[in-house]
Length: 287
Image 1 (spheres, rainbow, N blue to C red):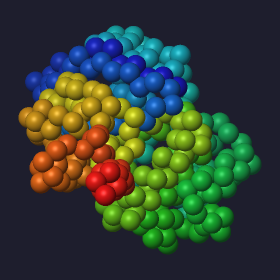
Image 2: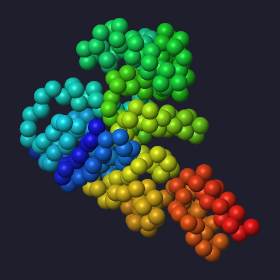
Image 3: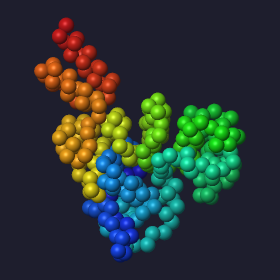
Image 4: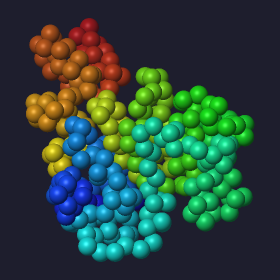
């Protein structure tokens, strides 16, 4: 499902003495089936953009196209439930939103709230726990008896049970150890590939943006400062540094290697695996 922002502006507490401009003139396109990362310094407007994606906030200027729907400033919108079903958001620490006495009831809550029968919701719950790599037996357990990583997966399953077309990920690995972060990010990458989902990742991790995103949108002081492919954006470290950001550690390692080698590698490497392959290729050519 396509998403387009066109000159979107939003102000918190608009019309009051506490009015604050959050984003302005935000324009970008998320094509259907793509994985787009939103990056930027704290306070750059990423979270405000995120809340427009399923109409938790509505633009005060401009318009947003979400699939076949257009959300325009100054216009009353009806039947927003369908958008909110099709655009699933995994917020930071989603396990904090668990509240039911069993995992099954927690996962079923969303689908049943949207009018689904209990039988169909329970079927979706079974499918969702399988997708996130949990055994069926977890459905009868209390979510509060699970480990932190399992609780995170249950919360994600609750979003997946809605069968969204768009998955919005707001710092989804916050608080996890390196292994947990990689497992969760690989889970989303697999879901995107297998189900043709459109994914929007809001992250502070340049490594995750480099590894998973097809394209990146850089936010700065409420505006879109840059956009492009990871390879294009991370090639220009100076412009990112000026925005308070940096390149992934792999890119920094590559630049140090090239400095010592005295020549550039054939391409910019975005992951450790790519860098290892490029170094091996170079060694093979020299042997």
